[in-house]
Length: 577
Image 1: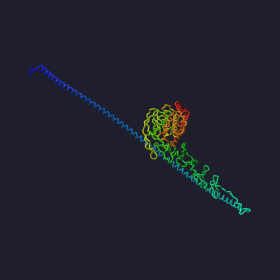
Image 2: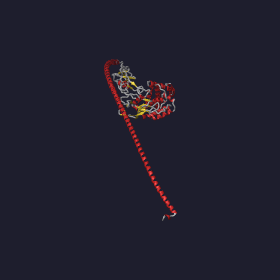
Image 3: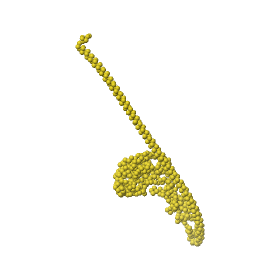
Image 4: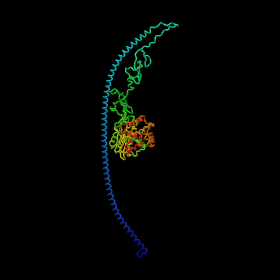
C-alpha cells in the first residue's frame, strides 16, 4: 500500500511507533553510558577501599609487632625478676640453713662440753664420796670394835654382879623357920620370899619382863633386840646407829628414803654441800626442788611454765630452740589460723570494757627469729628482756608468719614448719600484733591482751608514756583477762581486786561475752587452772621496773579509782592517779 494511500490515523500511529522506538534506543544508550560510568566509579571505589584495607592491615601489623615486642620485653623482665627473686630466696635459704647448722653445731658442742664437765664433776664427786664412805666405814668399824669391847666388858661385869646377887638371894631363901603348928591334915609352909633382883627390866616394846640374855638400852628404855623395830619397814634395827624422827626409831637408810629430799630432775638424793648441809633450789610457785648443779649443767626449762626437764621425761623441742613440756603442749597454739578464735575472744573482752578497737589489726603467730627481726625494725617500744613474746608493730614490714600447724616428729622435735611472708601495710598507727607461737592458750591470751592494750593506747591518741606507765597498764589488762578466764574455769566468785574494780567501770556486755566464750572453751584440766594461776603469779611477782613496779602501781590505781578514771588520768597527766 502506498504512503499516500494511508489514512491520517494510521500515519499518526506509525509516527508514534517510530518516536517510541527512538525513545527506547535513547534510553538504552543512556543506560549503557550510566552503566559504564557506574563501572568506572565502582572500580575507583574498589581500588580506594583496597588501598585503605592495605593501609589498615599494615597499621594493624605494625601494632601487632609493637604489642608482641612489648609483651616479649615484659615477659623477659618478669622472668628476670622471678629469676632474681628465686636466687635471692635460694641464697637466703642457704644462709638460713648454714646459720641453723652452725647454731646446731654450737649447741651440740656446748651440750657435749657441759656433759663432759658434768661427767667429770660426777666422777670426782663419786670418788670423793667413795673416799668419804671408806673413811667413815673405817671409823665406824673402829668405833664398833671399841663399842663391842666395852659392851663385852660391861656384860661380863654385869653378869658377875647379877650372879652374885642371885647366889645371895638363894642363900637367904634357904634359911627357913620351923613349920607352924598343924591345924588340919595339910602341911602349910611360909612361901619363899618373892625376890625382885636389882636387874629387873620391862621391854618398852612388848611390855614383858626382860630375862637373862641380850637386851638393848636406848631412847631411855630397855628393849628385846627383836622388839626394837624401824618405824618405816617394821624390821628390827640391828645397826649400832639409827635415826630418830618424832621420837620414833628408823634405820638410817629408811630415814633417808623417807626424809632426805630427792631431786625432782635427776631423781637422786640431793647431795650435801662443802659444809655438810643439804642445799637445793626450789621453784617459788611449782615447788620443784632440784640440785644446784642443774642450774649450770644445761638442763632445759619449759619456755612456758619454767619447770626443769626431768631426766625421765622428754620435752618437745620447738623449731627455734625452745622446749615445751607435755602439759603445756596440751593447750599450745601452733599457727596463726588456730589463734584467730582466741584473738576474737580478746576483742570481745575489750568491747565488754567499753574499749572496742575499731580498726582491723592483723594478728600473726611467728617464730622467735621473726619476732626479734620485727622488733629490730621498730623505731620505738619497750620490750621485756631477756625474751620478747609479743609485739605491737607500727612500721611497715614483711613478716614470716606460721601458716600451718607443724607436726611432732621423732625425738619430740617439731617438723613440717610452714611459714609464708605477710606484708604489713600502715593504714593507721598500728600495723600488726605479733605473738610467739607454741605457747599455751592462757599465756597466748595474756600476751594478746597486753599487746592489744598497746594498740588501743596508740589508736586512741595517748601521748608517749613512760615505760612504767604504758607497760604497767598493759600488764593490768593482761592480768584482768587471766582473772576473767580463771573465773570462768573455776566458776567461783574469787577474783582479784583489779578485775572487780574494772568491771564496775564497764558495761553489762562483759558478763554476757564472758559467759558465751566460756561455753566455747570446754572443760579445762586441773593443770591448766594451775597454769593460769602461775601466769598471774608471774605478773604479780615480776621484779622489773617497767613490768613489775608498773603493774603494781597500775593495779593499785585501778583497784582504787576504776579502769576508766585511771585511763582518763593517764591521758591528761601521763601518770597513774
